[in-house]
Every structure is written in structure tokens, then in C-alpha cells.
Image (cartoon, rainbow, N blue to C red; front, side, top):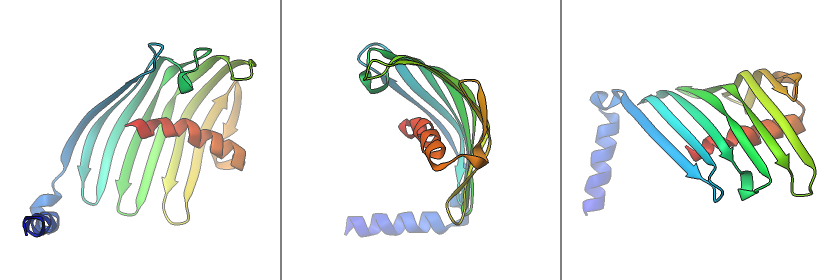
Length: 162
């Protein structure tokens, strides 16, 4: 019985025009690996029906992906997130480096810079724009092959910790 009242109250609140006022968001997520490295994401912004405007900054400080002592990530990337009705736009700017050796002992010295990488989700899946620089070579995000898009998605997934 109480569950039914709670659900009814939530539905009424969601449908009332006063419930459409923006709510302010401030959130920080900090992760530490076992070797003392950190990954942190700080998010601020406003959330309202039917949209949202937030900014998140992801910072990697001597972070060891997969707790691999031989590989270290450093850098900072900012994401601006805008949702308006059915369209979600995420824009990424910043850079990061990955240095050390991989699981096979192969040397790794990679740098990635994101320059206004925009991922728009509306309709038939995401579209990409902007450019990225990987180890000094510039790529147009709109023309990445599937392997390139997959690699970019893996990097952007770090924001899932937020």
C-alpha cells in the first residue's frame, strides 16, 4: 500500500509544472588504483525535464589501467553534456598520455588530444565530428573507420565512472 502511494506521489511530482524546475548537480567521483594512481571526475550543471546541461572534467594522475604497474596514464579531458528532448550531445576537449609497456612487454608511448570531438545521439545512432590527434597524426572524427570509432569509444568510456 505504501509503495503505491509513493509511486503515485512521484508520478504527480513529475507531471506537475513546478517539478520541471532545474536541479543543480555537483558530483565528484574519485578512484585510486592499488599503485597510488587516481582517476577523478568532477561534474557540475543543471538537470531538468526534458533536458540537462552538465560539464565533467576527468583527471588521470599516474593512473594504472587494469592495475598494470608497467603502464601509466596522465591527462585531463572535459566533457560538456547537453540533452534536449530526444537529442544528446557530448563535446570532448583535452589530452592524455599512456606510457610504459603493455602486457606483452611492448613499449607504449601514446598521446591523444581531443579537439571539439562532438558525439550526437539522435535517431539512427551516434554521429561524430571534430578532430583527434593520436601520436602527432590528426584524424577527422566524422571519417573514422569502425576500428577508430571503437578505440575512441573506449577512451570516452572513462566518463562512465561518473
